[in-house]
Image 1 (cartoon, rainbow, N blue to C red):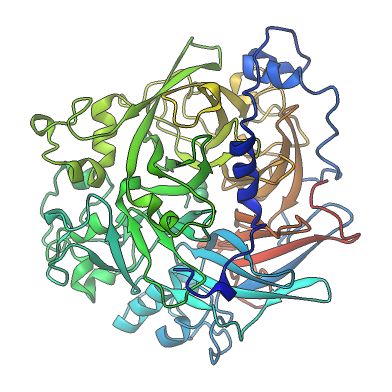
Image 2 (cartoon, rainbow, N blue to C red):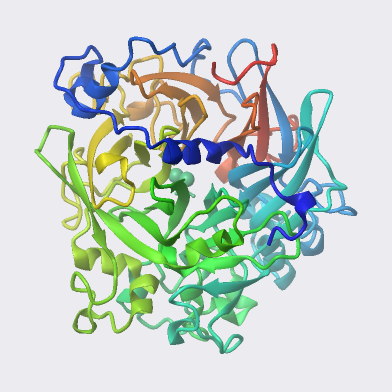
Length: 629
Ligand code: FEO
Ligand code: CA
Ligand code: CA
């Protein structure tokens, strides 16, 4: 992988030294005490009480003035901050790419920035050179094609495939600002047609073999790349989420439980790829969908490297991959499965991370997968939990229960989670590990089925019927050991609308008020100081249950106090998703995804008559300071 030393990421790669430092110093797990606190709702939890008791000498984390909601077609940030567009769907990534035009063909799109940018990571190479790796999750027919997708030709399908995947873009810093370097030799497009290999216990299994690949180890492409992860050995993790939407069954037969559980049915979601390529027609290639729904590891430092699908991390609708280094050196990756009633997972590597060692490159090939089970007292909003091991021949994952071999547990991870008794969740989206490496946060975005579907009754950690607003949970592994099977948890924030529902649980927790309301938390991430950044993918009607919430937004929270302040509002009908920082934390990169979806009246970012385009936004402070401080 990092074969050219010139292209190794710098040691000060931002998101990881903090974890490694924490692991090395073996800082003590925060001792819990029973003393009273003054943080309102959060006082309900022993964890928040412990945090409150450590606050005496801590500086205020959040240093900007909150901004109001917006329904305008632009990006707003606080006074003293500036937001610039770095790159938009269709902008050149490879030299020779044509300028963006809605009528660009597949060949053009293969050289341009993909659509619907989502998770992303910043890899510094020097003070003035870096690589930004960005997921391109999906496409919108209404904007991708001048004909809005009325009849999708073979070239149209290829264009959509080329707009999916991952964009690798070199940046250079000029006059104090990062900008795209079109001449960068690391620039690359990875698409739904890029050659990849499958690794881990499921590689080569009969369920992964197709006519085009009798080995079951070689696969074309990645798509519906939602969020991401970054490793301390310099690779990028891209997570395959709603892969089911690209497959159809032209035979119109009934597909079994192993398909149904993944949302695979006879119809795709309007992409029509199955009409032009047999691999997307399950009547012809029933195993192709088993080759998607994985976490893919990419070496952005080598544009010729082959991406690797890591089956050890399980197959589901992967949201992101929050990686940390445990005290003992093992790699732990927390993983959400974003679907109503699905689960929260954890991977623990077999081998240990050793700074600088080549052996790190295959740490994600072998390890143990776990799924979370939460317990507690109803109404308490905090409690205990355990990680249930998903290993073949353990916990009932046996042939008589439908798991004939180790690979079947990985390929049908969702079924294995049900078999062991995992807790159904309200759509686990992003997970983020606090920089002190002692606590972990996860967004549960919303779930209209909670308390309505028999299979998803109310439970201690998903306590609201239909959960229209979502919540963010956090947990602390016992003794600060991420490989421990036990943890304690609490609900960090229940989003809600205290104006519309002043008296009920729908008002949200005490850290929600009329000036910071939001719904459907989705992307989250920490900066080095421990500020938690929260992005939303919610209802933007600004009416009814959602009155006073405006367009989708990004907020900043201080986990020490529970305070939440609005930092950014996005354009019309967008989602805010994806965030990463330069190593000095003076530039923040934020994703604006699908402005104007469903033909809503957005012209972001170009304005006037232009069609809306997903874009990466770059945020700086006019005084050159650290973002959020
Ligand atoms: Fe791609 Fe669950 O968001
Ligand atoms: Ca998401
Ligand atoms: Ca979402």
